[in-house]
Length: 471
Image (tube, rainbow, N blue to C red):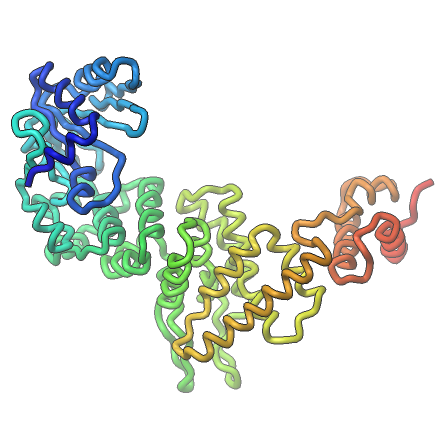
């Protein structure tokens, strides 16, 4: 297989080839760029291996680019990055690696192209394209092209050694399978199962990076099922494993909340590429195991799982090294509110109920409704359509109330500062109580969010609590 004509269309490859010839070093494109070229997938990240100094080659490329490139060198790793106008190219010298049992950090030595391909994680990532002797020719020692055609993830060498040397490759195997829709070759998957405990030496930051790529794959449930059957899910995400299983008492069973969660996740993935909305789908029922109860008359209940789940979100994010910022708060909010729109369709919808939902969801209301729609996973098609029609009605009412009251993200005119100044108070519980009572009166439509009316209401509330304005 030869890609010379394709490569000639991008002058960067001619530039790299010229630079390699000038230094008299064999030079190759390797890895993901080659794989994606064969799969006809877009790819901007270009990795180049030379049998020599990758840093010197990068510097020569930048020199020949005549000021249109910048070079960043990483001498400790023997690598360099060249940034051009529309792409980044990483350069490294060919190397061979050996590993210690207690670390995924390899002992590195200079090597040949063959040594470099041997150290690659999978056959489909061990492909190389020659840029010097046979420009555009694919070098494929492990039948990676055939594996691409068969849609197979397979290790170039013994999979037990591959996974034991660098256990992160187990996550990468599942990530590539999930992203590409490939199968993991049986011997490779069996080795993955045998080596699953080795994942414990990998940092949580690296694990979550791969897990997020699985979450963002086209059908993320496929990746999660592979994690489940490999035995990795219980090691990296035990709370999700707790969702799995069905309990039956007196002939009454609840649904398997693990597979329900995966269905909700796939439903969200069909509509949105947003990583954090997908995480909200993953965690929306995470507290069901902790809140599960059996009632003789009504069967299984999960009362309060939305509130407990919201309290679990920060702990899970912290342990898994997910960001403890507005992303976490977004997921926490959606977990806490995910039942609210469903509850609204079961009764007459008052303006007050809509106001409260709009106020609490704020600008995330559209994402909340997307999650709620995804949460309808019944096999009864008529039931699904009935719920979706109810959601349509709720959304129509939200538009009406929002146009009338402008309540989304509204701020009550009576602030904590006004309360403290009026009654001569310092920050205390009473200030919060008065503020909440005034806010609730506005949301319930008892008073308008207008200063004079709200101030008068504040005075009445405070008097009932035993507070008088200072003169």
